[in-house]
Image (cartoon, rainbow, N blue to C red):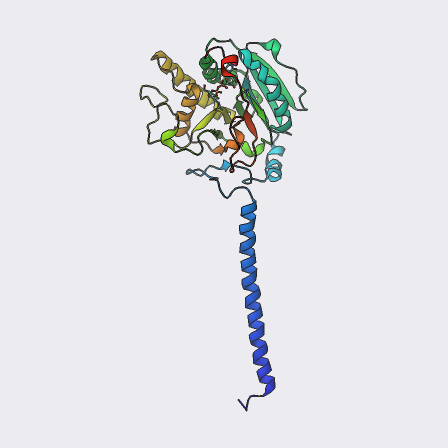
Length: 319
Ligand code: UD2
């Protein structure tokens, strides 16, 4: 040791110090980076939900898309979005809130064409629509059975697409009227065939889904099959894809009627059967179909569209 000069010792010590510093900085940067990502995810909105289906379709939740970026992609396409809504009998009373809230939150900045199907055209409220948005009223017969009103939507949507909508729009959303929009429903929901997970069943296993379970119905789904339970309050997609869906569901509903059978949840049961065989290309989370009577759960950060509380006995023609 006596032979090692102090300057050499200083050099060796300096080298170790430098190496140690570089290693520590690198390591601590990695640690920090990992912590940032973890913190980010904790603060962000999508660590506790499934955001892709087993067939790799996105499931849209708050935090899975960038609204500014996605609008930048779709807005220059100059798209028109058709929106069908049925207000038959006393359900006409829900139109005003539906339309007013849609003007605030639904496809803002896009061309929207509302098609209001009703037996009471004179009771359709006059709502101020933004530029590029139009409303047409289509008269349909009333009925003394709510099941028939709800189910025949497939038939009327199919025939109106044939007659009119396919020339007037690119995408279509078919929605329940007894609902209000509460937050953005925008271009993130566009896709070839779009369905929504029913808020009542997203936490359930499929053996508890209220699919049609009687093999005699064309809507039958066996206990060990099924992906999600989709809500009948929303069907969306390219006009032609929704056309095929409505045509098939209508035909099957009529075939069942010919055999004196009505599926457990009318067109919703047929929709679920159809979507089992024809997988949606995009699935909307229950943010896009909530129900006012249901307490918000921790997964749902934003309620975008929700069914209002209604007195079934009072608004429906039958119980
Ligand atoms: C569920 C579905 C609904 C439909 C139904 C099964 C959800 C949240 N809702 O809702 O889409 O599949 O079960 O049949 O998934 N309507 C009228 N006048 C009437 C009755 C109904 O216009 O007298 C129309 C109206 O647009 C209404 C829709 O049909 O929003 C569905 O009827 P509903 O809301 O009474 O059915 P509901 O609440 O059981």
